[in-house]
Image (cartoon, rainbow, N blue to C red):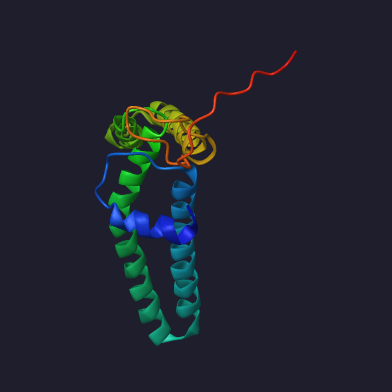
Length: 164
């Protein structure tokens, strides 16, 4: 899958939670979102330096960035669920990762050490989750969520045993 196909698939499969997504599809979408954010960020920074009219333009770009982030949130969750399916895992794991981000907000203010510990654990979970999604290949061949997104249509060959 190339960059264009990944972006088209991303918006076509807005609410699709079934099936699997490859690393390339996921990573191209992350790249696409970073490019959009950086473009708007630098436009905002440049416009706020120019003059008063530029400041209004910068505020408009900031709102556009927020709007784009909201619009891309749901398809990104769908893509993440399909990516998790590629590991033959339930999509509910995505919800579990996002819930860990909310827990520190629910703690009372008089427990700063506990909040710090939970935030540190959350950071480690998020890093492990990102490594899984970005770098680890999914299940080879079909699994309970569908066919391998990298399948070429050729019959699968058994691995050749290494000679000793």
